[in-house]
Amino acid sequence: MDKLQHQTMVKGSVKQQFGRKKSIVGKTIPYYPYSPEREYQRFVKAYLKLLSQELHKSLPSLMSRYKKGLQATTRYDDASNLRKAVTDEFADISSRLEKKLEVLELEKSLEKISKATKDAAYREWKRVVKKTLSVNLMDDYYNGDFYLQMLQQWVSENLRRIKSIPTETLNELENVIFEGYSNGVTVEKLKQVLQSKYDISKQHALVIARDQIASLNANMSKLQQTDAGVKRYRWSTAKDQRVRACHDELDGKIFSWDDPPEMWYETKSQGVVYTGRCCHPGEDICCRCVAIPVFDYETVDVPIDGDPPQ
Image 1 (spheres, one colour):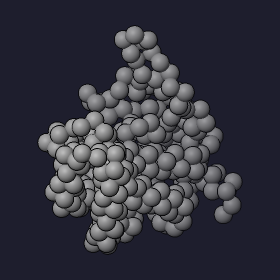
Image 2: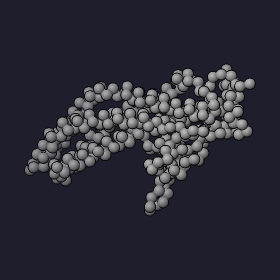
Image 3: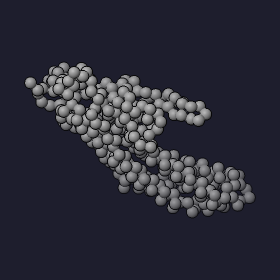
């Protein structure tokens, strides 16, 4: 069966659901994949715990060396010695952490998380199609290479992101130590600043985890819908207090997959400020919004098996 024949068969199967309407909006809202998001955050926390353990092992010797430098009479020469000691120690931490990563099975874990996200996205797509068009999707169509390239790219990118966390964190902590030394900051004060900086890095890493699941889910939704002839969608937010004003304004409105709306934020001094970023649901930073498909009778072509009703 060629594409035209398949689409004719699909239109025959869903004609009753459209009736006299040229288009119908999905009759249920796809659920956001919170479970894979929590799994990714648990994974990142485990990774950061290893980093924290290695940092705490090295902290006493680093603080001892730092205190010695503060008390030295030739602070210029000792600054060079301190820099070398800190750089060497952090390089050793990175090396030890790399070995411990084998326990976490980084790539395998990311593949598992990406599969869970894919399964959730397909499950919701299948549910929306069934509820709206009263047809069953062809599972084999989606079990093959449909998502393969997207998942491989996501795993590769996130592998790079996760591996960069200790390097970026250690570089920031290293700068804190050198800046503290230059300003004569006490050991106790430096410990507080280091902890604060580490906490910020930890929160940033957790935000990345949340954002990456949202973006993967968004990309899958777009792929599923456009592949099935869906040209438009209705924006739907998570409808809670965490929804940003911009997305709340977009809620319920219909957009084209070819023309995403521009994002904005509001300030007291400037009012509404447009960012220049145009995003579909889930593409903005940590966005939990989803796209409800708008099925057009003339273009609908969901992958289904069977013969059209007589």
